[in-house]
Length: 89
Image (cartoon, one colour):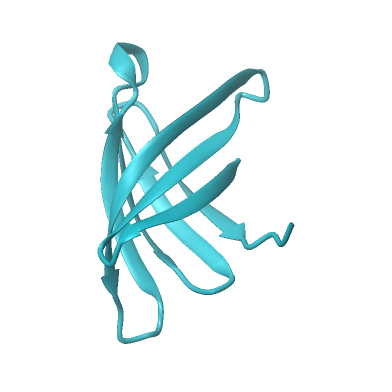
């Protein structure tokens, strides 16, 4: 999975997620995450996104530093954790 962060304002980021579900089905969606600066130098993020009747609503909670994004996600049918490292292009 890849994620691209775009700052909307001081308390919101639009994140575009893209990847493949079960290595076969491509997906791409955007979610607006609320941001709160943490005492640890990270930005703490949370939000949710409805992905239709089959996948339901996914909830997100995580933190981002200059180099990493670590988050948990959950929905009625799925849950997990993902860690992403910054990629310079």
